[in-house]
Every structure is written in C-alpha cells, then in structure tokens.
Image (tube, rainbow, N blue to C red; front, side):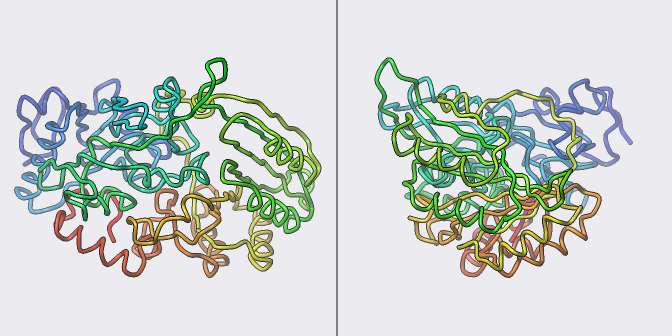
Length: 459
C-alpha cells in the first residue's frame, strides 16, 4: 500500500497528479459518505473524483484507462450524477467514482424556441425551477432529487409523459466524452450513431457532459401561474381491482394527452381483501371543463378516503429537497412495458399483490407523444407500449420477487432499464432487443470496446 494525501491508495496504483489530487475525495473526508452512497446503497470506493469540467472528465477516464493497462485488470468505475439509479451502478467498492454533481449548470439559450443546455449533475427539481421562470417545461422524472445524467440517457417517464414523450426524445444535441478520452459533439448530423445510442443506451458509449434540450414554451397571461399544472391526488380502496383499473384505463385513453395518470397499488393492512389505491392525475395547463370532469369522475371509481386538488406551477410539482444520500433505501424494483392491461394480466397482478413480499405495484399510462415516434428513432424501442408496470419490494426476498415477476413476463413488450434493479444479461436483452440491441452493440464495440466504465449495463 502507498499513502497519498493522508489516505491509503491501493498498492501499484498510479499516483495522482496535481490536477487530479485537487478534485479527489478519499475515505477520511467528511463528505465521502454522501458522495460514495446512492439513494439505495452505501459504497466504499478507493477514490472519488469530483469533476467540474469536461476536461477533468477526460483526464479521469485517461487515468483509469492507464491504470487498467498497468494492473492488467478492470478497476471498478462508476459515473454518478444524482445517485438514484436503481441498479446501483453509480457506486462501487474498491474502485473509482466520477462524480458529476458539480457539473450542474442550466442555461436557457433561446426561451422562445425552448432551447436549453443542462449539465448532467443538475437535479431535475432545480432544472424545473430555472425553466419555469421563463414559462418553459421539460418533462423529466417524478422525483426532483433525481440527477439529469442518468435519466436523460435511459428514458424518462415523467409527469408529462403523454404530452411531451420521454425525456430522451427531447434531446437535440450532446457533448460526450468517449471512453478513449475524446470529447465530441453528437446530434442528428454529426456523430449521429453516437447520438442515437446515448438516447436510451445509458453510459455504455461514454459520459455526457452537456445536453441540449427542446423544452416546451407555455403561453400564459401575465397574471396567471407560470407553467401551470392542475394536480389531483386521490386515496381510494376497492375489492374489485380489475373493474377499477379497466375504468381508469378507459378514462385516460379517452382524454387528450394533456392528462397523465399514475396508479400506486398496495394491499390494505387491515383488510386483505381490499386494495389501497393512490391515484395521481396531472393536467398540463390551467383547469378547464374537460380536466374538471376527468377529476370529478376519478372520485367516483372507488371508495375515496382522501383527496386533494390544486393548481400549481411545474416547478412546485417537481421540487428538489437536496437530501443527502445515505444508501438506506434497500428497494428492489422490476418493471415491464405493455400494450394493454388485459383481464388475465390484471388477475395475475391481483395475485401478485396478495404476496407479502410485494410492497406496491405501479401502473402508469405512457401513451400519447411517446407512441408517435418510430421504434428505430433512438435506443428506446418500445413505441407500441401504452402502460408501464413496476413491482416494488425490499432486497430481502429477491428470488421470490423474481419468481412473482415471471408470472407477468409473458405480457411484456420490454423493460425500462433505468427503472430496474435486476442486473443481468437477460434483463439487458429485454431492454435492447432485436435490431436495437444489435445496433447498440456495434456502436459500443466501436467506441468502448474495453468496457472502461465497468459499472453500467452492456448489451
């Protein structure tokens, strides 16, 4: 072992030069735990590089590459933006983390056209705060402390999914550092295969250091709420899950894409015959007759125990609490994308809910704008899917949960890889099947043949 900067570095590692030393965080640093942990897991890497520029990302990747050559091995390497990835790839033990949290600038280039550049370490809640001031909306996830980088390379099923589509579909250009340590621009004209791959392919092809997005410009009167959202949350319970979900499905498919809707289902603690329902409806815009009728109907579909409705701005809907990451949320999540919620599927889902290993089930309507694009548009293939279904559990009974998940696997069109805790080749093949997987693999083999970023998913 050798010692550098009051910390023990693994024997035979290349000593850090002055520029890397300035951005290195070691295990004796008081901030280490937060930078080393994710939302779901505590990590213990050897060193964390807290980068502030693309140039530093380039230097970090070159250091890791040279270290691998020297040691004739692959040092665990993680890329971390917000640290909420369910696969826990953004941390590791004994390796290196490139932490992007200081690469967090948001800049509006043209507010009339909705052009905005966002760095990967920004949190989506902070992005919403910045854009909302200029009457701009960009659909992201549904949790404000999620980092931009991970979500914007894997998918993005947010509150406005039916109106705006996936977050990755709003990207028009990226700056990306490839694993060979070269920073390039990628869009539909230059490096277009790389651009295709980064939209849904995750970090297999490199580290994005800046995204350019096409946000939506909202036209509202001066005295109205900026980026207005009409929000409804209803807590209900029912014995007849199939009838409830069918009615919910008919309602959401009969209204225009300004409305998005999400269900969270769980078993009642008091009465096991009852299913507890947490229903959230999001209307993009100020309330009108159509949205009010939809909201009113939602209250009649089952016994309502609590509900609220209010108008708010998009920045109020997606807020960042900037909670420190402590790795104390050991959840395990599996998901599928489906074309329809059939009678047999819902019967099976009810059986799964009865199992004590399942904490809850999510169902999200993802029709609308996402379905308008061709399956080859980018590395997200599932343009025919209308619903997203996820099973939530803890990490104590993973094998049992996987067995339950197999009951609905046959209904699947594929997997949203950014929302899956399952780390396996089979899961990756479900996320990038057929010609999509073949094309993505060819691009990865070209730009990242040695799989330098070890802590990621590879097809």
